[in-house]
Amino acid sequence: MVVSFYGPHFPYAVPAPYDTMYDPASVERWPNFDETFAGKPTIQQREQLRWNANHLG
Image (tube, rainbow, N blue to C red; front, side):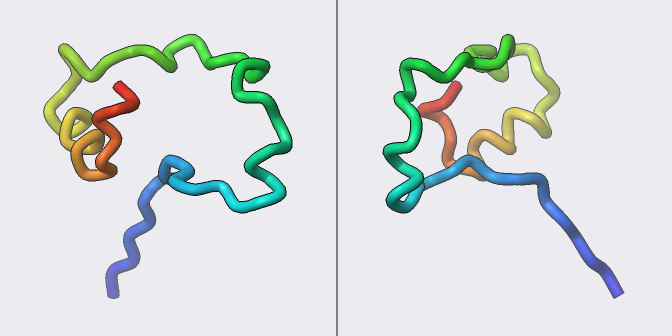
């Protein structure tokens, strides 16, 4: 038996009423939020493609 658990994914579409609970401009970004995958191991670069999250980095 094999059980694989992947880490949490990016929130793709937040449902109401949660989508208006916070002003995005007021949420503090974590220190590495704008970090790119440049220079990272290939496996991490592939994760960005796998989650179709190129627009985030």
